[in-house]
Image (cartoon, rainbow, N blue to C red):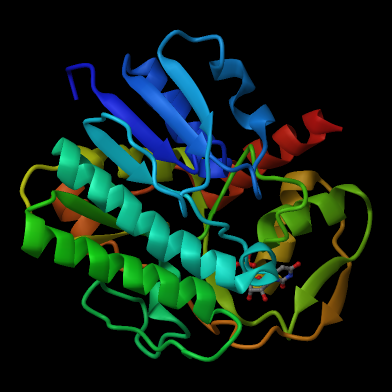
Length: 313
Ligand code: UDP
């Protein structure tokens, strides 16, 4: 990525989008950030607005838009279960119509696309850890289907636009990611546990807390996205990006308590429907193709995130 590119980031004012925009502006690229601000905030990109290389357009990806760009990172979609389930039809439209508009633009401009896919395409997996060859176990009728199936359809569209129109696509299957910049109302487990612990409240563990996730620090993930976009070749290989260090939600309670320097207390709440029991990426492909693996440990990343949340109040 030595040359200056004109890069579109949809969902560019979200948690990951804003961090990606910052990284791309710093690298000297011209960045267009598109967002409808449904679950994100303009505050995330405020510091970039004065840069001559950065432009924000308030726009919903379910509507077409005409832009001239060299690369597109398609991150637009609510990603937290409480947000994507709040308006499931809108979520599906964002994934599917948004993808069609992005791929149509890429076809017209000859741009390369990186699709932010998700570990959710594996559903409640019965293969563990999950390699990219695993096809998943998704409930098409459940409350997570709007997101899971929307993202699966988006992958199918990427593959079809490549086969039919030779569009260059990259698919990143992003596993749970956390870090500074997460919204306080995000509702996902890391921010909930940190905020509850800092307030001295019991942390809300859903179910018995034995379910597992693998948490990747924001900056590691952004590095993976940038490397994947830069990868040459036309195969739309999906690539898992996430931290292979797996932990249960009860382990996470303790790790967050350590990072906050507090004692944890727990209150148990019902497990949501279709909540995956286990999730951990096999990142062999990312290691081989991108020479990428996470460098920030969970404890270190949590400490940085806790410090950030403390500075917000
Ligand atoms: N979870 C929890 N307490 C919370 C929020 C989430 O125990 O306050 C659990 C949730 O049931 C799931 C895991 O933490 O098993 C991760 O949930 P999150 O919403 O962060 O992301 P997911 O991986 O489910 O999309």
